[in-house]
Length: 396
Image 1 (cartoon, rainbow, N blue to C red):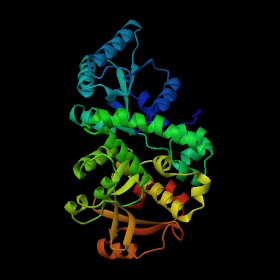
Image 2 (image 1 turned 135 degrees about the horizontal axis):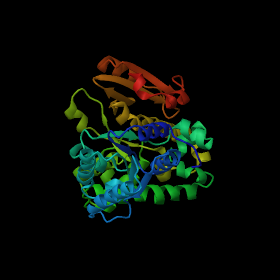
Image 3 (image 1 turned 45 degrees about the vertical axis):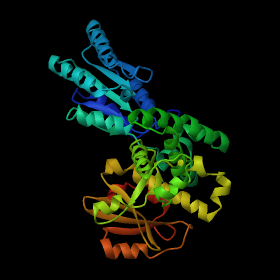
């Protein structure tokens, strides 16, 4: 990754240099550079710091957190350090980690031990559960998302089309000249650990093979609307729609793949709708569906699908931080690719990229739901470059 610094570098550095106040949690999907960023910050600060990784620790060894913490306190006492920083990476690997962290943090607070704590974790589901249950009011979150067009351009010189096709995983940049090697890296080094470590650890998955196949199929259908019943027909393993639906929810919570719901005024109808599959990073679509960049780029239908999926991934990536939700809308032959909603306000976005002609969906949605904005991205609308560089929440 070289020495490229992500935007959050300064934020983490500033929080490390301020007085002890809250536990700082650096959260985001796998392979977006959380550990790299933390190492960059640690080389910059003058404070004594202690870095531990829970990755290889037995998941049932909750006492590891206490032992780690206590050894840092001992070193602080021996070296007479006025303050120090403790960083624990992959914290969510340890069962009941949040209870242990709460105990030690509260003990330091009572005894006025000036130890600042930074936790890194990749599974949103595990992290969130622990943070809301045990550590409410004791932490601040710093989110690291998938790499944006601007970041991939600044770090690796990528252009718009490369980013749309290869997505935003920095570790894949060196392999783009060899699609087979690139695909192998995405599947083996990104997807497999994410599913085996994050997904399988977070939830009880009765049919791991079915989960994996659902993920692969879902990725290859990114930007497509397809019922779970139809998807079941393509899966070898007999499952049921409820199982698939719950697996899709878990994949969503791990920032991998989601099934967007159809936008409706009433909540119940949203949840009964046919999902539109959407990857969080276009690398996942390319890994399971792409043939070759040169070939896919010149086919308007195929490329249009990639563009639409990239727009969806970009919208999803900012949803948690921007506090909005992402939907699609379709009725008969009218369709709007994305509808985003925040605090009762909506914005409708149609992607026109050669995949299909314009339909009257935007007009109908305008009449039916009165969105704050309704606009086209790409051909005859907001240029893609501008869209991918905007802050989505500014659209409201």
